[in-house]
Length: 287
Image (tube, helix red, strand yellow):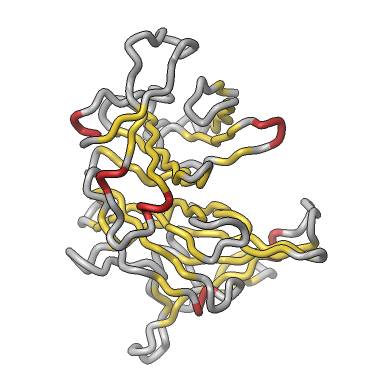
């Protein structure tokens, strides 16, 4: 998976965006056969890219993307490794980076990254919960190889069924995170003040979760936003959508609307929905 995390630099002539990627195959493209020649047997589970182009030009080519991978200097071939790796617990796990959000005003050099902690079995992979890490870009915002990646911290109220990882967005002093419950309630929303989130470790008790409103109609048209602190597994969490997702991007676009692209997990119809709402708490409309 990949997503544009957001802008990190802009002047009168150009603008640059920070991109995050999941599993990354490192090699060269053979344009004669339209196939890739993979240089290494290992595959980083996350990598970064920077895309720069003319300011306010939405027609910049995808070739403007410049990819970055870390290198393991202890190996003979300097094999590529992930930027974000577990720093505690089972160090053989890996991290799928899903979303990121700036923690200061643009141009922000302090970001937070969210992802899944994952391990492999003989037949498949298993997600055990969500993690986060702070990223300090102050040394050189346009060179990810210079960025300082903080400790990867497990988000304590997440599990194999309850994730808060997708669609991170900073708005009005809060970091908003889209979550999902794989077994019941569907798409969820949480938030925490930026000021408490940049603590090390973050103040998890400051997290608030969107919960049900007893006056809400089934279609959500009369829902009154209600935020509550506590363990989300003990709260009546409000569902933005009644189906699970694995990742999304949360953004505010033209006309004051919020947008999320959605792909329903575990379904094979490959339908991509665009959700829009005048408020981040809904009601949301699918098209």
